[in-house]
Length: 152
Image 1 (cartoon, helix red, strand yellow):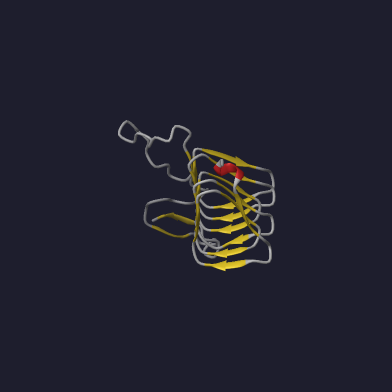
Image 2 (cartoon, helix red, strand yellow; image 1 turned 90 degrees about the vertical axis):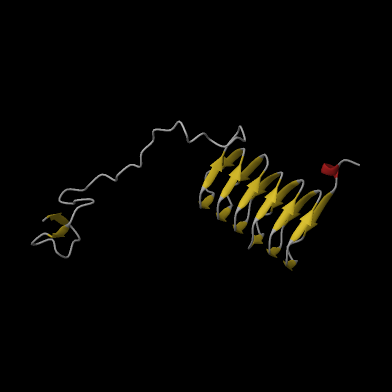
C-alpha cells in the first residue's frame, strides 16, 4: 500500500496536547498543543490551531500555526493561513491574504549559500533630515520632543 493513500485525519472536535509523529500523510482540523512530525504531507485545515513546530515532507497551511514550519520540499500558505513563526523549505507558495510573521528561508538547491565569496556589507539606514546615525547627538531646539537629533 502506498504511503500517500494512507491518511490520518484529526477532526475539528479533537484537541491533542503532546507531540504527534506519523509516517503517512496527515490532516489536522482540530487543535494541537505540541510538535508535529510527518514523513508524508501535512495539511493544516482552515479551522485548525497548532501551537508547536511542524516538520514534514511538504505542508499546506490553511489555519493558524504558532511555531516554525519546515518542509523537505514545499510549503503552501493559503489565503486563510495565519502563521507566526519561521519557515524553511525548498519551495514556498503564499496566496494573497495569508498572514506570515517570521523569517523565511527558501532554498531550491538545498545547499547552504556560500558566504566566503560575499563582499556584502551591512546597509546603514538612510538618515532622515536632521538625524545623525552613529555619532554623538543631542536634541534640536524646538524638536526636543520629536526625537530629531543633530551633531554636537
